[in-house]
Length: 253
Image 1 (cartoon, one colour):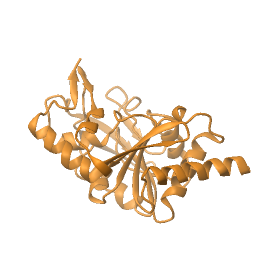
Image 2 (cartoon, rainbow, N blue to C red):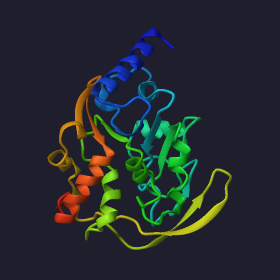
Image 3 (cartoon, rainbow, N blue to C red):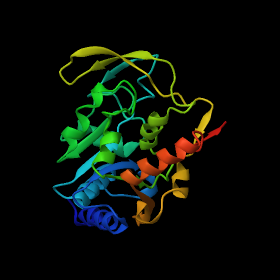
């Protein structure tokens, strides 16, 4: 590794900690590689910086959403092959040798670290994208954090898990069947109730209106603006807001 790349990894780590990432914590990361500027080593350098910030006792999670390729028209999810459709960093993270992935056809999570296996292993028991066994729910229970790394506040998949508690009119589509293929090639068919946001615009940036103080921090990492959300606070306050107004976090198209 060049001294320059090592220096960028340290800079990413230092700036993440300065922004409010907890060393030794559980961190779910949504990301935009482009927002960081030119990064030597690309996604690998960013992931190394995240892992360095979290330290040996930390756990790094990233959404590995696959709904663009795995859907009603092609309902086969292969846990080792299904590509991530939400950016270069999570797709690279999926392919790293030490990364594990939860079993879900459209809303899987990848992870590495001390608590990754425990967080991911029960996702297969859910029949919705972000149900009670999902890593999103466990992130809350473990007092984890959500890092929006240069992508703004909108692409926050944890909000779907909170919406599942309320079941607003826009959330669910029609039940369908998927085939799940594990790393050994074993196949199982399972029925799911997927999300369907057709006709609605997601406005999860509105969490900025309900989170206060350290519940939502803003900082800089390289050239990117980052937001750090405390998962426990998000679940509490977003749930309360949805109970009052189930359409608070969407606009009709």
